[in-house]
Length: 302
Image (tube, rainbow, N blue to C red; front, side, top):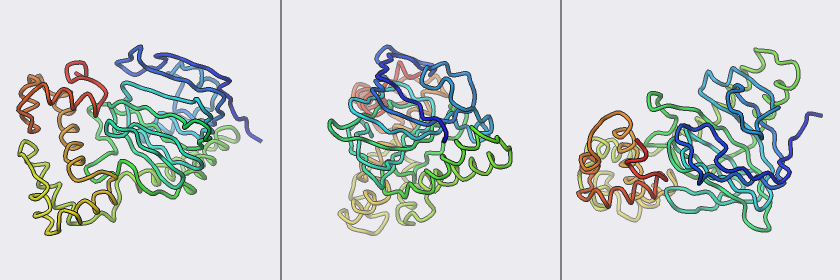
């Protein structure tokens, strides 16, 4: 029987090692219980201390993985999450901030958030929420697991990923055999990637977003996007909802925000220039939308 940790009502504010930590961060862990395996001991947060370490996680740029049995009023808010974050709901439901809006994450679904955005999620009052997660640690120089084809929220069979995390936890607490540890980590990465970079996406969507990414400054319309795929506007909406958990225009905004984050991180271009590069003539409109989607204003992001 391996130990399960309990938060015992901890409430921590701004207790993280992300490079742009802000006092608005929230960590209300309530009386939730959890299991976690971390890649190292550089993160001093109390809830991670004492958990088993497996340095092999770093080979895939994974900071930690775990399973959490959350109870209301559990709430996490990270203003700057320095890595992709995937969570798969096992039981119950919770709410997750996705693309600047609260969405329900229910059993049989997973959510994938890109790096360097606001990451916040919480329990629904009166409903317990069980989920497992994989937290990556990425820098602007590392290509994130999130691509133009990655869903933000969608159906996902959590059982294989849960079993792999449980196997890694047991091995990390027990024999610590390198071969076995590596096996469990490879499985975790495989199951995450099966969701993050699906191989069964529709070729019609691939044609759309390949063309759009080359011309993000263009004022694309839903009619034009549907025309590229040779489908009706309504059918395109259904395809995008099915594959990405977003509408076509929301996915277009996602691609623009990803491009803007890249330009803010890698160039010294003015915000006005970056805004125009992703189709926004008004830097104020761009800044407001960027803050809603990412959680930071463009000036603070860079």
